[in-house]
Length: 171
Ligand code: AMP
Image (cartoon, rainbow, N blue to C red; front, side):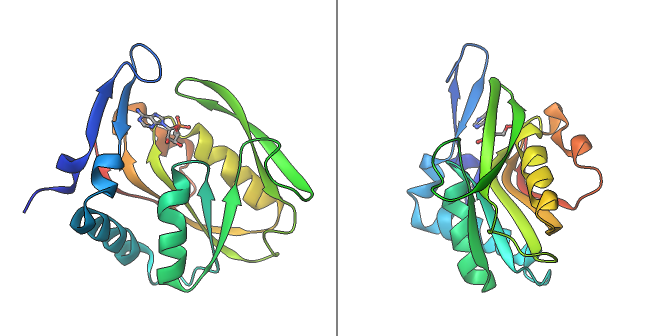
């Protein structure tokens, strides 16, 4: 059986020179690889009694609702500025390639909700950290962060020392 990481395509110099982009579309289009990826992500977090799964725009929106459905949890989107229609809070963050801002609806999380944050990939951890700050400002309890891919050499995990960080494929 092919390893999951063999389904991920490296695209050099995208979106900028010097970045090796981990393209997951080659995994997503394969029905067995997609199922295995979701099932493996589910197995790690299934006993955490998660109330809400938070997905980060855009590629975080692929795995988070699939996991929310399997976990019998709700799904909450974290989006780029100006996309969410109701009242939001926001946080700035640094990317491997630039800086940006993320938003979440103020009423998306209730005090004490057990929250799992999901994204396709953790690089420097800046994005995930910004999402953690927003969840905590809204009173959520972060029971874990889960990524399909972890670029371990960028040490994102060190920014998230106080949390449980799970990943399936490590580079
Ligand atoms: P970071 O905030 O540095 O952990 O960056 C994580 C975010 O940027 C995730 O939402 C990823 O989808 C995206 N990202 C960063 N580096 C890469 C990469 N080499 N390949 C694909 N996506 C990346």
